[in-house]
Image 1 (cartoon, rainbow, N blue to C red):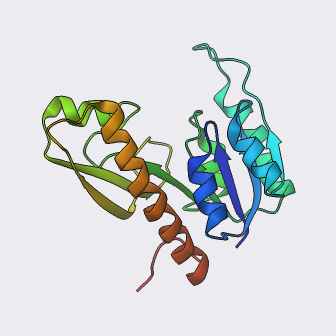
Image 2: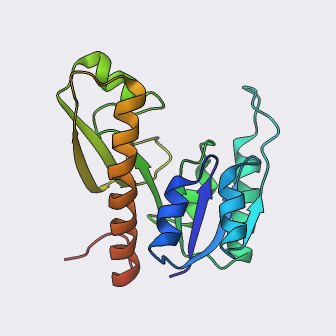
Length: 190
């Protein structure tokens, strides 16, 4: 399986994937970011499919088709979203059913959405964590592939807790992707 990674930020998940020799065939970013630099310095093909419109009128379908074109040109079989800041539209899920993987900084189905760490703290949970799941058109709602728990410390704020979750997430995501790549499919079959 050829792995494509979608990233938007600092690239720490991408660094973890590269450090563990996952066979990344392409990195795509929606904005200029450190993840593109990491890919290029690691000799991984990288493309900027820049999102210029951040308004409510954003054409999600057209943007998704642009991303799909790059993925198709790179012959990508499996997509790992690694902090990608743009929610993609239906065309990617039609083109790559159950082959788009995402990670989330909470134990889904609890605390879906952009502010999961803050929401967990506000709720007062004693344990949170991270989830690797199949991405679907409904955000943070696909089949759960793996989870790791992270204890909330009394002194935690959003930043300190999120950093500990990201540490667990890097290991969990790499291990889950390796399992998928080794068995040649995302979901286990009976």
